[in-house]
Figure 1 (cartoon, rainbow, N blue to C red):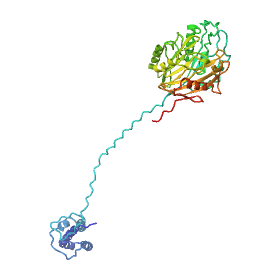
Figure 2 (cartoon, one colour):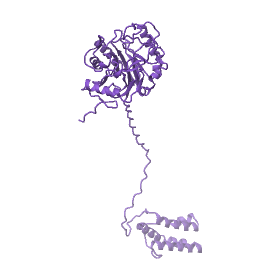
Figure 3 (tube, rainbow, N blue to C red):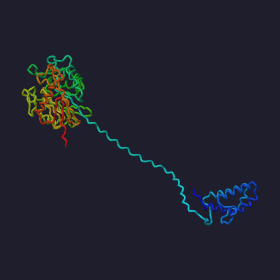
Figure 4 (cartoon, rainbow, N blue to C red):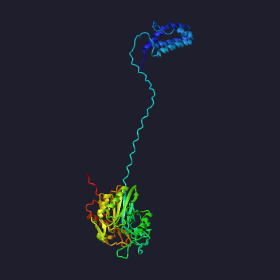
Length: 463
C-alpha cells in the first residue's frame, strides 16, 4: 500500500497552526479530558512525525475551533478534533494552496473498473436440423413359380378321377410353395356340361372334364394364375370354356387366355399383366404375330411386368428340340416358337412360359428376359403318357426385378410316376435334359444351368 505523503504533510501543518487554539481549549477542559486530549495529540504527533514545539505559520487553516466550541461541550469538542484528524489522515484528496515541501513519485493508481451495464443476452441461433435423407427403398424382386400341363384326371366319358385328389399334389407340395406367384397351364375344363365338342370315339381324340370343385383344390394347392389357352380349353365348347373361367375366378385365382384380354395381378406393389396364347382360332393365336405384339404392348403400357404364356409346338419325345422354324403336329401348324417368343420380348414381354410339347425343352435368355420353351407335363392322372422323357417334369422358378429383368432362377426336378402323379425326383433327370437341350439349341445364350438346377447369369466382366 502507498501512503499519500502530501496529505500527511498538510495534516501536520494544520496541526501546528491549530496549536494555540488547542491550548486555549485545554484550559477550559477538566483534568480527565486534558489527559485524554494530550494522549490524543501525542498520538497524532507521533503518527505525523511533528513535535509539540513545531509551531509554524502555514498557509492552510482549519475552521476555528471556537466555532466547534460554541456548538458543543467539552466531549464534543474533543471528538470534533479527533474527527478532523481522522479526516485529514484518511482523505486521499486534501485541498492545498501551495506545493508540498516534498513529494514522492508514486505509481499511477489503477482505475477502478467501471461495472459493465448488463446487456440483454443474445440467444445463439438454433442450428437448422439436417434434412432426413429419404429412405432408399429396398430392391423389389418377384419370384414366379410355374408348371406345365395340369390334367387332374377326367370324368368324361368315363370316371378317371382320383378318390382323394389332394394326393395328386402332396408329394411335390414343397416345390409349389415359396414363390410370390404360382402359375400353371390348366389343360382341362371345369364344367358340368355333357356336350363334348370332340368325337372321343376316334383314336387319339380326348375331351377332358373335371368337376367345378377342382377349382378349390387348385387354389388350396397354392395356384394363383391358371392359363386356359390350350387345345383342350374348348373340349366342351364355348359353354365349357366360360364355366371353366368362371370357376377359376370364383375360387380366387386368375384365368389367363380369354381372347383379346389381358389379365392383371399385383404382388409387392408390382402390377403384372398376363396374356395366354395358343393355336386355337377361339383364343389369342401364336400364329398372328402382329396382333399378338399389339396385345403385349397394351399390357406393357398398363403393367410393370408382362408375362406371356403360350401353348404350341410339336408333341412327344421326338419334339424335344427347339428350332427357329415352324413346327407341325399331325399336319397342324403349331407355330414357330422361337420367332414368336422373341417378338413378344421385343414387344415388351418380360417372361415367356411355354407348354404343349409334353416334354421339357431348352431355356433361353433373350434381351435380358427368360424364355422357357416348354415346361412339360405336371399332372396327368390316368390321362397323359409318362413314357420315357415324357415323365420328366419340373417346377420352374424365375426371379425378376420390378422392371422384369431376369435375376436368377431354379429348376426343381420332378418325375411323374406311371399313374400320372408327380413325385420329387432324386436323380434330377429334367435338369440334365434341359441343360443338354439349352447347350445344343441355344449355344449363344448367356444363361448358365448348374447341375443342381440353379439358373444364373455370368458375372459382369471387370472394366
